[in-house]
Length: 325
Image (cartoon, rainbow, N blue to C red):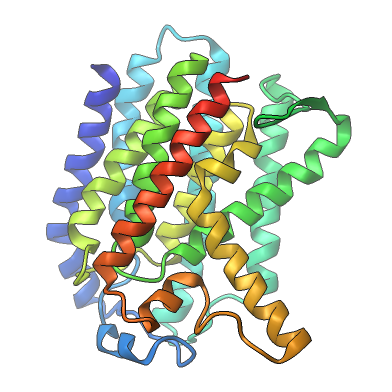
């Protein structure tokens, strides 16, 4: 009941915040610029308020006050995992905010440079891992789903940074059409609620629940036709939350299944770029893969539904993997 209550608080705050935040973003002229390299039919969305990720960030932050109240008697390690994970997500959200601000206010379409963003992501990942390390809540034992466990010692840390940066960028790639990233992340968060319950990590159950509630509340405003976009402010924050959950459960490799859509989106981009550089031919009509299906004639609603079903399958597989540990 406590977990459900926190999820409900995040949902209500996020949903209600749209009534005042979206008009504010419009008045400030924080409209989305559509890149020339994107689908030309997305041009009609230009001017839609961006930085809407502030809505679910606010919902998750305020509901986390209730979470801390319910975790008052929990072990210190549980509180540390929740706090450090939320701090990393906020750091990623702030990085995304700077990127969005550069795009929509200064009218620089690309925002931060790839190098600037990468350096910021790496530093935030290192800070998160250092915090877990010195609090004694980080294990260097790498759990590989359905395979086994292997203590890789110091090598765990560079691998962990790679996973965090890669996963956060993968979530960012998924934010390409109305409602896709929020709905897919909602399904992923629900999977993490079950996995955390199985492994008896109470704080991670709460974190996954408020994430699910925030995404659900935001989806009401972001479903097609979207009245607001989350921007990098939101997508990088969501990436940070998903990584915090995976590391909070001490099974970051579970993201292979628990974040299956993020993996597919990233692979489609890598395959497209690699194929064009090597063979001068494209595998997909457009990458990431959700744009490929758009060009095949799929509606945005159809893509969202199908991708959520695929994500649900990935969540079920990840739950089975956790049960097998």
